[in-house]
Length: 240
Image (cartoon, rainbow, N blue to C red; front, side):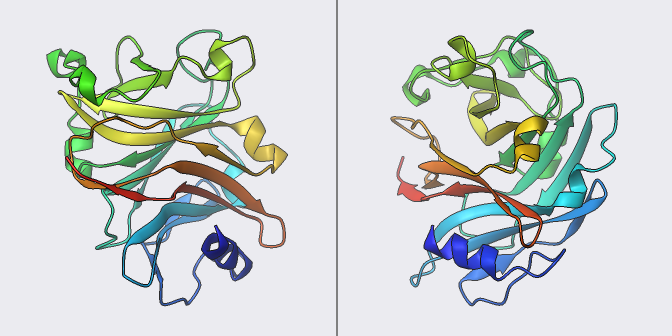
């Protein structure tokens, strides 16, 4: 996390780029009334440690009354499984009713190309779930699925399922028998509180693809720069 702290402290106003040899960036894109930019932090051996994106505080202004999807390209040759990210704003939340039906952001980290993501439809492929040996601990699929996203998997021991209000949670996603994304789901209210957190990511016993997988995920806010950061952290190499 020291590298991430250095990253945040070096940000310029309304600009997420810094000039460190171990940090690579993706293209800056418009997000709401602000901007967003992806980045990856690597160690001295070139192995990825953290991947994520920043967005300016202005991105939370003038939010639409309907759902929106914004793609954030990942840095080229980032060394992770992440192909691109998507910020999906759910103006009224979504199912399950009484759990996630509050305004929130679905912050997807996709491990498939964008063209494949956009081709996802409801059908037999959506209901073709991965073999149980690949299930993350305590996770189960949510009924149904979302076109251009996939089937969402929730941690049934998360606080929103044990009598506490939802403010943040970590989601896995699958399609046609494969896990295809990681997702931080965070309420608009939590972002506006400008609190910071780092939570553990419950692990899969086995993975379907060799690569670097996160042990934690984080959301931070830099008051001086007015910049939020969403990251997958402590990336660790897993073999098939």
